[in-house]
Amino acid sequence: MTTIALQLILAMLVVLSGVGAHAATPTRRAVIGHAALNARVAPLWVAEDFGFFVKYGVAANAIFIRQAPVLVAALTAGDVHAAYTGGTTVLTAVTSGADLKTIATLTNKIGYDVVAAPSIKTAKDLRGKKVGVQTLAGTVWMGAMLGLEYLGLEPERDKITFLVIGDQTVAAQALEAGQIDMTVLDGVFSRRLRQRGFNILAELGKANIPFSSQGLVARGATLRDQRDLIESVLKGLLEGIAFCLSPRNKPAVVATIMKRLKLNDPASAEEGYLDVINGVERKPFPVVDGLRNIQRLMKLRNPAIEKFKIEEMIDDRILRQLDASGFIDGLTKTYPPK
Image (cartoon, rainbow, N blue to C red; front, top):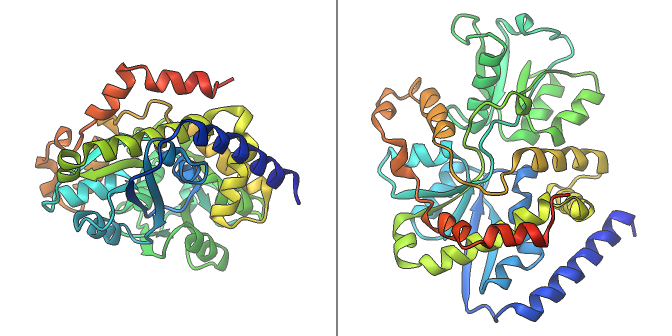
């Protein structure tokens, strides 16, 4: 048994012993869907694996739904109670008539690395090249657009073509195979490519570009009719965040990332851990500027989106009440950041 695996088991035993001492037997169930498969989902995975949802009286299961439109369909149909997803998904859905609300936003800045083929040495070398994304107008596409913008490039002017390839795992493989010339990846994926001679043209996480990435979303009807359920889910997620951001829990978080992303390389999981501690907000209030940046990009493909009022897709009242009650500060004392 590896040292990391042993540390994960010991950490879980300590946490779960505390859960057993204080939690009521869950009488409610919740399903939380997520379409992203990256390290910044760690707070959700930790909350499930370490029993934090159970601690607050809800048996919650996190399920991976590969495509964001499928996740939205499941959410609007009531097949999942909440979604762990980004502002891009939500804005697309609400402008099409869906009654969805952003409850919390865990990452309020873009965190991708701009990764290019070994032959691409500078931004100018991307002119006339192919960029791989998961979907057009999706989060990865927006990350690529912001990356190109940061590098001083304009797709139309510089004749840059977008190809729909797939999620980050598939995009990384396509880059290695020479099918595309550039993509944007989280650190857990970009590190491996960097070691193989691929170039990191920009680390967007260091640029502090406002962007609403991972967050907790629910139907307006669910917030009205099952508020207590959503509050319990949010409490569990907030404890997952606090756990992840406490340095003493690093081995357990790294092990969780390795397990969930099926990684064999601890160093890659360490890169993912850095994505978490550098990108996830301890108090995950939605930031309007991050959503407006999404709106600005989306209107390039759908001008009607400009008319939508961003504030209408946010309902952070539960989060604000929990913060005012001292709940989040209490978690910080339990899981100190230093």
